[in-house]
Image 1 (tube, one colour):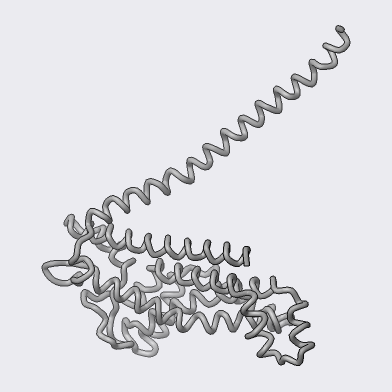
Image 2: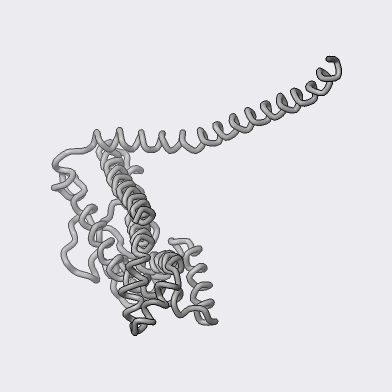
Length: 290
């Protein structure tokens, strides 16, 4: 009996030690999760409460200039800049991703990947300063939609190219070989076989690029400038308003109305980014089940 007890004692000590270590690990993980979630919940709560309290009809019907301030000019400006930036970036980024995936297994492809990775690591404000020198001063466009859209497109293209390349690489080679065996040429294989199969990944990259363009501020300070009025249809020599400028500038104003506009703009941007991220999740989930 004593022998059996002495044999079980060390095992119980090891189990106790393992339980203590496991509990400490769970507590540490819980604290780490709390450190991540608490600031996020605080930001979302403050922005939501103050943003919703500032909502009104004039917020969407009036511009920031005038006695009754709204965000119409900033909303329209953000929408226009984002649309034109995506129109430039999507075909170039997807085309670059297709080239890297299908024909980029050489030195040129390696150079393109390296430059793309360098560009993704470049601070956006540096890119904005570059565009200011080239487009605003060099080309003489002034603060304008064209300079802002091209700058955001340059920022988005490397992300979209790399995500597209990774998505296309997940397509089995057997699908390409089957298409070639049926007599398809390169263009048909890419457009009819590879891209449709990788569509969830490509769409995910496009939505992430869209989120980047909506949430950027620094490049637009140097390129879009600011206007208290809605976009007048000109692509050059006409500053454009945007929501992130309202967040960055109006919160420093001394009056409560400017603070309300800043919170309302922040809430709108947060809603757009949240909707885009939900879209990304849905696309990824649909791609896995398809």
